[in-house]
Amino acid sequence: MDETPTGPTGETEAGARATATAPQKGTVTQRAIERIKGMISEGLLEPGQRLPTERDLAAQLGISRSSMREAIRALTVLGVLEARHGSGIYVTQLEAGDLLETFGVVADLTRGPRLVELLEVRRILESTATALAAARITPDRLAAVEKHLTAMNATDDPEEILAHDLAFHREIAVAAGNETMAAILDGLSSRTFRARVWRGYQEEGAFARTRREHAAIFRALAARDPEAARAAAAAHVGEVEEWLRSQVGPS
Amino acid sequence: MDETPTGPTGETEAGARATATAPQKGTVTQRAIERIKGMISEGLLEPGQRLPTERDLAAQLGISRSSMREAIRALTVLGVLEARHGSGIYVTQLEAGDLLETFGVVADLTRGPRLVELLEVRRILESTATALAAARITPDRLAAVEKHLTAMNATDDPEEILAHDLAFHREIAVAAGNETMAAILDGLSSRTFRARVWRGYQEEGAFARTRREHAAIFRALAARDPEAARAAAAAHVGEVEEWLRSQVGPS
DNA sequence: CTGGCCATAGTGGTCGGACCACATCGGTGG
DNA sequence: CCACCGATGTGGTCCGACCACTATGGCCAG
Image (cartoon, rainbow over all chains, first blue to last red; front, side, top):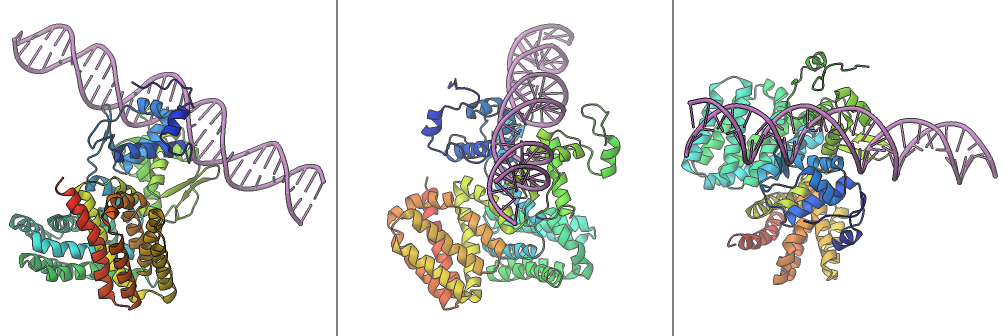
């Protein structure tokens, strides 16, 4: 289609000026990242679509495959692209889950006072999500929530409890009808994040209390009482938040 | 030091077993990313600390520099590492701003119904942040907020208005005393995101209304009235949200 | 004719080396 | 004492080769 007959570092100057973008800012790889992001937001690349090969892309932008690979890798970890070995590179569906997966990394690496802040954000979102869920949840989804609640109370394996706890809240977040919020909350409650907090928390006999709180949340959902649900969820998260604050503060 | 006389896929079996980590899962680069992340969360790498050179790191993990570079690039875009040309690679401060910068990318590439959801999340956080700010804001910071408000009303340049609008809300978010939340809101209001929405929004004569809403938010802050502040902020964001919903819905 | 198998071409994944651009630090000369 | 400047080390870029995997199509047995 469009060959670039110019030299190696070539990249038609006319073309560069035509796109009106900065002729050269930052690293080459950074530019490539922006270009691909631009192609997507510009609509040239649809979700799920297959991109040209790394080699072709590199040639198009007039950069080496190494640099192009770094750009692709960057967009891959951001959840924008997906590379399938032997097949090709594809644009993700750009759904909430794809793009917000990186939020888990944030939660994992955040520490100190920021961890409390992160939990405060979660409290705000979780309480609102639970309130929304109380108003919108369907009977079958409510049953699913109850299933996780009972399963959580039926075992003593911390690993299993954590899994059901996670599913419990996730089910509620989805029921709130906002997938983006659910994805954020998912990241905020990522496995290692929870595990890190729980490690010391549950040793203080907070098990029983946690179960009571979960039960309270469920009752509020079943009663379709948004205000009660909001309060119960806020108290639930706030409990952990307060404990964490006491752990971090006087250090 | 440790030569790997084994084959291409080699990777000293002894070494792999010594670290006790999974012997081989996913791509080599992915493993390198996890390793580095692990070193940080493990505390071996402190914020601000300088990492070994790319070449050394690659040798340590027994991979090529190319692969290591991809791993580093990935962690760079995630805001975990920072590469300074000619100097070295450093761990960021791991502050909210560093890690949540990627949130802007999410906002930029989100589209369709998800965009409304994202704005809903912002409404929830922004209203709460504004309420908190009403209770906690200091006089001098309040003055800074007012400065942006008047500056916003004093010009007709959309570019400048947008800048002050952004600063207006950011100042409030910071005053809420939760940097993490402020960083998230910052990403949610990233430049291109706002510009994209505004492009069509302000053409409907929403300028005056926006100014009224900003004034109302400021009054609530000055009056130290959290409830009024929450309501004003929620209404402000909700206004845009509602408009966006009408634009996306009947498409 | 139909079905499954397999050679093959094409793709991303990895590697090693070379060179360039920049930052830093030390010595040197003013 | 300070400004300059070269050497050294670092990340940034490029190249070419090969490996691992997928997908495709033709071939052969049924």
